[in-house]
Image (cartoon, rainbow, N blue to C red; front, side):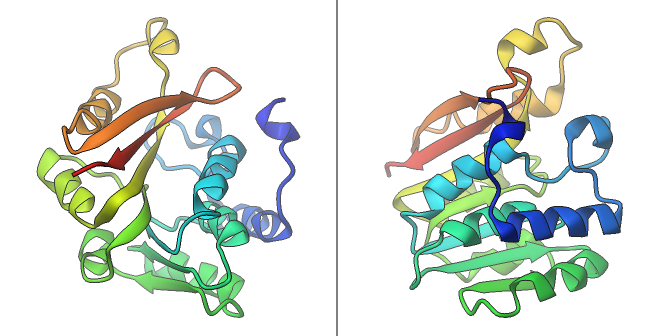
Length: 202
């Protein structure tokens, strides 16, 4: 099954339409090396699977709301999802998608600052460009023991061997070497993209 073959909930389709209206790239190919892209279907399905067992979720970087929509579509009735976007225009455009869902809160601001007082979380989707180990460790602090942290936009090792090294992706892998996490890399079905996921153990 390819990513394109994955069924997408209506809320995800609405978020993808909004991304097109905003000119927000839906794929990494559209985004190029210097822009973020929307959550890919394979990543979205993985996030939905994790969200289905979560009572509290934090998302750092709402973007066009595609990842948010995947998680909200699977979130339990008594769950809560806090998503934070620093770009006020994007946050304002996304907010109506979730206005009728009391479980979802779209916040404008610095993601790390805004989620800091809202944990602990069962799931954190860190999609806002964490650049150093100290910042990543602070996110791990916000997880419950047994909670999971996810980062996407990673190139699998086999694919990287055929392309120029990308320092940011190496840095992401180094984050997940934390002794407080049990971590793995999940390669998507296109074999060109993967994500990193860690479960807090201490």
